[in-house]
Image 1 (cartoon, helix red, strand yellow):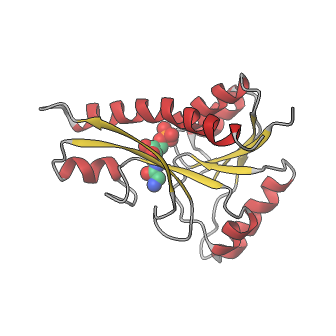
Image 2 (cartoon, protein in one colour):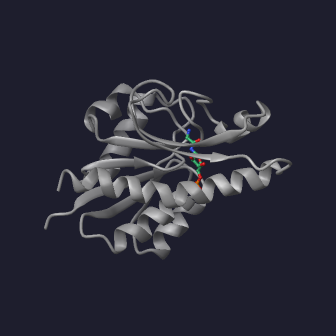
Image 3 (cartoon, protein in one colour):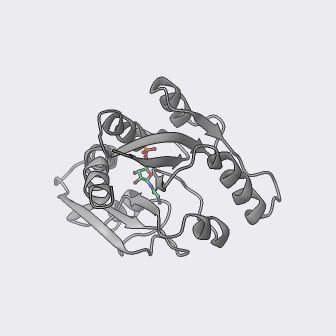
Length: 191
Ligand code: GAR
């Protein structure tokens, strides 16, 4: 069976990327063909190498036009022929050039119950707002900030008196399990 070819884009630690690589290594329906980071020193690139997945670094140059930057990302990805782009802590907003190239085949995970708390610090914003429940959202990516069509959400309650660090760590562990489960369902329908 032909597998869905996934490229992961990530900017940071890459715990979600790692769980997706581990899931895909045993999957009949998907494979991770490369991991691309816009941060040369991101831990996610080490994680990719440790999982025998090609690790690509494409950082934005100072004053570089976004379209050129995205063209360089697309050029790096091209040789790996990804069918889908999976964002896992990729902290740049994608522009029209990239979105058009991978039209409707880009998904993201966001650390809040969207449409609540979009932006760079979902858990932080939810915690500051004293919410009693939080969660994460997997959604298609469009030109807006975390505005694309929602695919799935996972809720969890806050534990009274819990520290922010504990809350965030719990949320991230839930994301790590949830993301591969949702990708499995999503791709099962198309292979
Ligand atoms: C995750 O919490 C993810 O939901 C979030 O960044 C973290 C990355 O962690 N993404 C966003 O905030 C996107 N707007 P990881 O590098 O350990 O996977």
